[in-house]
Length: 431
Image 1: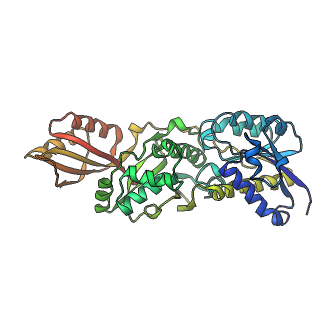
Image 2: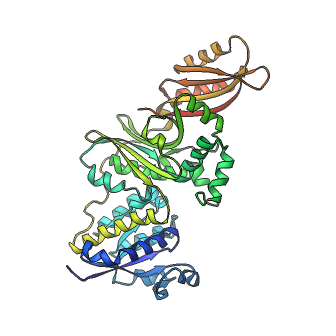
């Protein structure tokens, strides 16, 4: 075995950066046996040198100069864990153009500029790897590119945001309302100070763009993904869903259909018998369907210091093996197709609808007439007791219907005198 030392630079020493530093230190005694080489963090780019000094064994590795890393020919691998679009994009492109391999966990950047980064890696004969950008410690990018490459994938979907899954779990199991569960998530450190990206589905939307691109071999960017969050979900919605044998989860869904790719994130009813329904708290799970493997599910910690660091270090080790074998980019960009992405209005789902209506004869007939006019078939309709005088609460489950047609029916119902309020509208997951 070679005693060659592979030098790497960390960009950022936050939660994940600190985790990567710890995992690499824990692996030092076994690196030669695993890789035939050792990996050394030669430089760490930080903003505050004094604050970062307490986190490392040797403060001399710290720097606040990007040029010091870029211009060091002995640094083979750059590990970008800064997050955000800039300056991360500029730094990564400069590193790739300088012939350095790059590992990133930056879903925001990859969901928008992934093609540019992968093209730069290919042009410079280096690796750009990003396993940690989706689902934290759960291996999913590499399995889709390698282990499942013999499949034509038709669907990849799942629970890919731990914060919202924790909130919905508390609402389901303990009857909390959204605001109460969000407050608990914040106090326990599951939610960011500004939780918008999580609770509005934006974080999951970026991950769906990446998963769809890899799974279907066709470029999907964040702007292609319809996103809807969980802020309007109530404990009543969850209770009614459970009465119907379903749970409510924030799902990221990507399907490869004959008409194009569907890509969206929204809270959905899912049968309680589905494996994803039992994925609770901050755990993530990705469910895939291929023509050869059929169904497979990947489950585990979708975020956190060490789970995410596990995925980053896995990419680092892969690159080290490539360096030792004098090869690179064995599997780079896999988007060799150009499949159109469908507009949300052209997707099809079943729908759960909860409404306050006038409590009088003929209301249900008026509602079903509106549905029929817009080609919406009603699968179930249940009337619930209402505490509001002269009102009734109606819960409707539709058959599979085109989103655009359903939204037209919704608009007409909202303008109807018989309908006092549309309290909730949720999609129902189904193939």
